[in-house]
Length: 363
Image 1: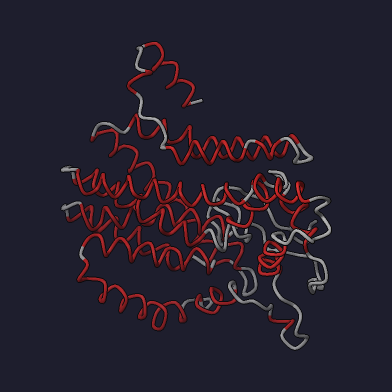
Image 2: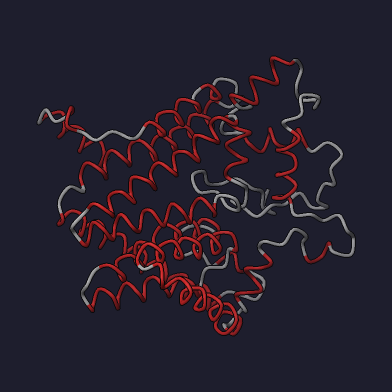
């Protein structure tokens, strides 16, 4: 609705030609995702997923880039984002203190589960960190430093946590390269002296979320977590001899244009073959590899275009940081750059643009 109102205003004032449009990478990515809608098997789910992509990479870009043209507008948006971060962090702390020993997934703020919450923090925490480092006002530094550090105590998804540490490292390197050793020392202290002594031993939970085998299956030798089995199944999809492919042309079409957007789980299961199947067909929601999801759903070129898209946005943000003379704009650009670095890593372990994949016991 906000975008619609803004678009009407742009048309009414005749400013269509003055708009800054998304980069070529966004157009290529969206165009490569379109064909797979037609053979997805579920037009409703395919259209819903494609609309998500359009909303994230086209509509949101148009809205934010073309409205954040003044310092006042940038400050207003940053304040709104930091308020949201504060609310979610406080709620996550309450959930953390109230959660039982075996329920780390429940620590998610308002975002459903720890993986989506972790991906959200990968976006928000670098913004807070950038403001703390680049805006020279003591109260801003203190408030934003607290907002950047506090979520680390309630972030219980290993993949996003790893991505965030790398993203914050990129931020420190942008700010002052010589400070990187101090940052690495602080990370070691966090992992060895702080997180293990919190209520639930966060380091153990973070590590377990990345294990290849689940705790109950080590002795059996075949309980590989399903997220990693899906990685192998995705590699098997590149073999033209696999049963799901009927002809060479069918193989080429599906590898290049995908098996069908919106129904990833249905397609990846066709490539399990003789691989060991988990005793329980249960997978923690939103722990799929985003690159694998895109490659299977919309084809290898779409997956590569997504990586290009992240790199393109990150490049633009870095250039804006280096050329701007406004501290707030520099902080915003630096935060976006480092958030994209964090998301690029996180996407290997959690979904960052599609929600709701994965089976739970309720299914």
